[in-house]
Structure formats: structure tokens, C-alpha cells
Amino acid sequence: MLEHVSGGELFDYLVKKGRLTPKEARRFFRQIISALDFCHNLKPENLLLDEKNNIKIADFGMASLQIDGSMLETSCGSPHYASPEIIRK
Image (tube, rainbow, N blue to C red):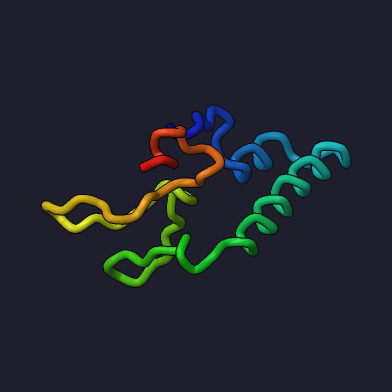
């Protein structure tokens, strides 16, 4: 489920509010840097391409390509979060 972003875009927030306080600017900056750090740790397997070769970020561990009419032959997801039944196959 996607988060609800009731605050809208940062751009609109800045236009409406004007100059940020140093405390608020640091909070936003830390969140942006944290997101960039996360992206730098992505594996190529987490980056998919659409029909125009645009990058799409996958569902980190819960995504798998499945051929129509066939069953998956490999497990998907992180073993640390999988149920015991899945681990035992």
C-alpha cells in the first residue's frame, strides 16, 4: 500500500511557506540524503526497465517475473520475513 501524501509537493510547500527554519531545512535534508544513500545500495536486480528503457525500482525482494501460464520456480522475498511454511517449501 502506498503512503498517503497529504502534504503535497515540497515545491508547493516552499512557495507557500517561504524560507525554512534551519531546523526544518535540516530535517528535509536528512531525509533526502537518507533516500539517496538507500538508492546507492540498490542492486541491478532491483532496477527494471519499461518499454522505453526507463528505470523502475522493483518491490525490493517481493518482485519476480512470471511467465503466463507457469508457476514460479524460485522463491521470492526475504527469508528473514518469510513464514516457516515457505522456508520448508
